Image (tube, rainbow, N blue to C red; front, side, top):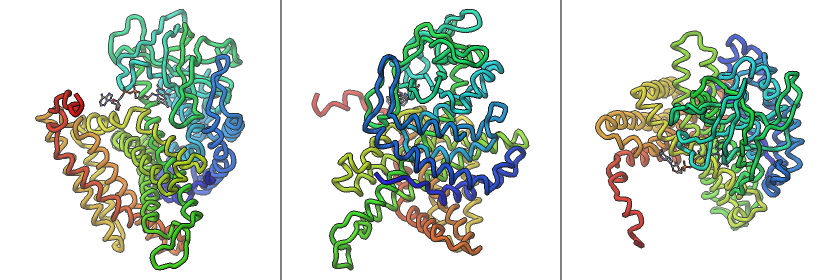
Length: 592
Ligand SMILES: Cc1cc2nc3c(=O)[nH]c(=O)nc-3n(C[C@H](O)[C@H](O)[C@H](O)COP(=O)(O)OP(=O)(O)OC[C@H]3O[C@@H](n4cnc5c(N)ncnc54)[C@H](O)[C@@H]3O)c2cc1C
């Protein structure tokens, strides 16, 4: 497998010219996020990702995890990598200094997270879930819980998990059955959770599980679910670890990919837990964690796409096959037009996804630092609208990108030893967990568009048009297709708002196509912004070839990827009748 090298130039251009990092660094409290500091952090993270985490990827895939005597054993190299991660303070970048965090913008942690997931996605899931747990506890926990658990979670000494799913409750959490009985100052939690990522391991001293369960008098449905903190080991008043709690893994799943991420069936047998937030408000509390996780999963789509691209590119330079048109001698396959088409599709989808993801994450920081309620609401709505696009679109494109990675390797792509197949297998989980992409699409059309009568989407479209106006004159030929695509997105918005008034089945029927359309348009817009930045930097005297490459990325995307929006737009006109009117027997009519 090719080594992973963080695409630092693209990350920095995206931070600075898309996600508004320099503006963020002017905000009170973020003064430390100077350009020099950002560079230093990214460069050191790139080194750790390449030299420490990256080399664990293949071993992890081959060894997987095992459950032995009630404990999950992960590959030997994972523990050392995790120790270096924790000791380097990598998990604390964006958190509150009161709990040992470094108080830096969340946005700065985003490229760093991207690097961990590119280096080893299965491993990166552990820090990712811990970060979600910190956010959830920070926003919803009592002062006492925060003081007792946050410092070690922030430092990475302990890790966190998210226990939502049960065998009967996946997309529909309203039917969660785990129970919580009050007992003195705590609760007794009983039940079984499935598919819990890093539900157990030995990389850290303790694991803090955040668990959804029902109180005895809870009303049915989502309004009767509460959130509990359940430690693996009890924590004494002085912070030392006490007895093992009766919460632990019952088995580990054998999966198609991310073999080294422990996916556990978890048993809670009268385990001691503590209420987080208000009773019956558990799902709302968990939503902070889920929103963070949705952006992170979208980012994983970018990460695995980047890794697959680097792998395919290396192979395209090494693999010698027949002469390309215009030459007589055999040469590397990168000389063939179709291989170049595949590489550029991989590269530009990845770059577009990165820009959409970073931009959405930046809005979360701007919301926190907003100077007025109005500004806060605008940034929050922007991030909320972009979240299902980041999760849905970036993980859908990861399927295509990792599949192209296999294709570029030809037969060797289908053989495990090149590593291309691992990226493809690892990426397959992304459209499923953290709310399937079907659920993301429904979120985009429902909560994020119909609920505010399309206001946030109208604001995003207006923002896109502003970018078009400001774009350098030399980019007119690239701006034109974006302008047309933005108009297509506007028509889709109108179709949704109007159609939903008379046809309640329409939003669900068009949701996926709507999400994909929005993703491709956002990608075109972001690549145009980046190309514009590249033109300006070049004019200022920066002669880095990367800036030329960025303009070529935008050109390729506008010509060969962006036009896909038209297909999705046409499919919206199919409405709800053709799918929803189908009798269920018809699906199997060919053999029944
Ligand atoms: C490797 C892995 C790791 C995971 N990690 C965690 C974890 O750490 N914590 C945790 O709590 N869970 C975790 N999960 C669970 C994961 O979030 C769920 O699998 C996911 O939410 C889907 O639920 P489900 O599997 O029950 O599928 P279902 O809900 O049964 O969905 C099946 C299909 O029906 C569709 N569908 C269902 N309902 C609707 C609807 N209302 N509208 C439209 N389509 C619908 C879905 O899109 C999907 O295509 C993990 C799962 C895996 C495989």
